[in-house]
Image (cartoon, rainbow, N blue to C red):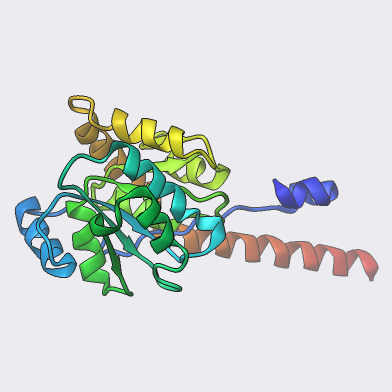
Length: 229
């Protein structure tokens, strides 16, 4: 949409190919085992919400802290896996909100550890202001983890109605959806919807779609070449 807004003439030539989740992102065979594995990584068996991604301004992790501070129950944690700048700028926010002792910052984890963390989480929180795709959302759905995310376009497209979307940039809207997640049976419904939605994405489909674009481009090149001769 942003490309087309700048260059309307390219509309017919824009093709979208989605990412996919690796095979290790799958629902837990036994959630109690996944919970034990997650607890070993976190260092606590307390229930938790999960945030995954770089600690960059467009990821808006401070909104997750603000929403958590508003609605989290006693004993719940917020676990943040941040590949870069872990905790930067957020520790002061946490102190101001009175939740510093309930945050856990993790450096890069292994793929299997991340899968366990997603399988056992109360929900993945993805408050991004903008995204190109938002692969943690897809990985979460593939693991049977409910997702609460902003309504920035890419996340809405990837989630396909299988999670809860909140108005982008609003901690209050994010908190409202986290509260809604506690409605009887809703988390289980979202787990099932997420698993179904995740099946719509695969690297095989991505490769086939990409190859089709190459074939189309090659055919167009050949056609133009013939028309010049």
